[in-house]
Length: 517
Image (cartoon, rainbow, N blue to C red; front, side, top):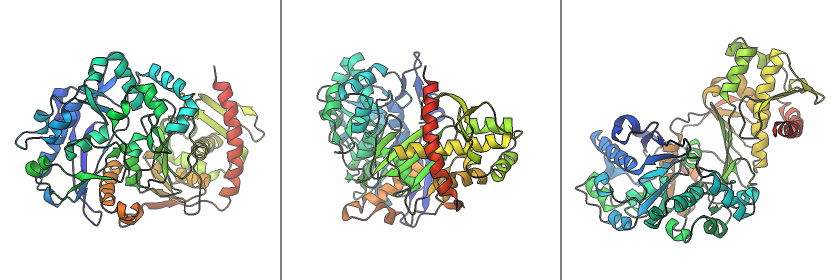
């Protein structure tokens, strides 16, 4: 998290204001790099809580100076990077209720946190606590079935357990534990804001089916933890009106509602306006896949969260480490470093690549946990090399078959009306998008993700005002700009890739066996 950002929209979903505060350059006194402190063990990564508070002071001042009339804001919501946590000191709730509008938030809250530097998503220092939690839950897969994910070092529950064990005095001085999202909502609310179901799913603590804290996970993490977390609430909840502090200091209206804040990934799903059956593929240094699913099947890979815009649905997230850097390597080696030649190879080779399949894991992959380059001929025999054109198609088809295979294993299914939304650097390559469309047998649309979490938060604020009356999120955002159609599947794609997907799954098992030490 390198900045605090705001997007304001009007009733027609037009963006009327944007602003931001860059942590490193505008708040240099906190001495962060990329908004964080990386500790000497290279595992512990934190951010100063007061830096976030001061950034909000600065941002609101900028908005006022820009002439934005905050009295016209009907509702607000927001998002924070997932997994990070904020530990409020005993007595902080009273401080929040009694904020003096003549002082800024930084002055008022400087003694309100029992932990001054918050653990954030980059932290990987809680390996032992992950092992302990998985053992208590009955194994990694059982934990995933309860919470949507196996134990991860960055997940909040494991960070809480580590704090309790390593710094018990600070833990004992804690009155409330917030996620970054609910912490920010608390500032606007003037009281502790509930953790929402969707961001709460990234803690290894929430039972994603009952949408309540899991007793097994709570007991394995810390005593009386439910009291410190408070009861989770639906992501569409209106938590209350903005506090009198923001009315008197910044001119917000007393009728301005605070809608539950959520995590950055759930907010991005809202910003992309995913619907049932949709899948979003971000083609960057690593490739990230967002899914809307109805019947989740948690696994050891990927994450399942409660859906932020439909409480009866779920979303899933998969990350693949070997993305654009691997595509660039094959372009350099097989296409003379030319994207034009690379694209021509995709155009000139048939769907299914005459039965050739490739796995290209230049670095240890996350999904699946394998490494190396593995090529197979039409008879499933391993080969050491193929022609440059076959190599190009084997790479791109293999990457997208992997995205589809692992999405379906988490409960995703292609339905009539399914759309693939593509973003990131490679989404400008028409031939790559054509392969993506063919593999998923669905039209591919391109979208701009640069503002998705912020825009999603604004959409969610608007939806929060009408959600209780049964109005759907898709109805609220139907006036938003439509994504651009980029590719439609070839008539034979379904037959070719349904067969190929089964082969790919079998061969992936072989690759996994060979990658194990």
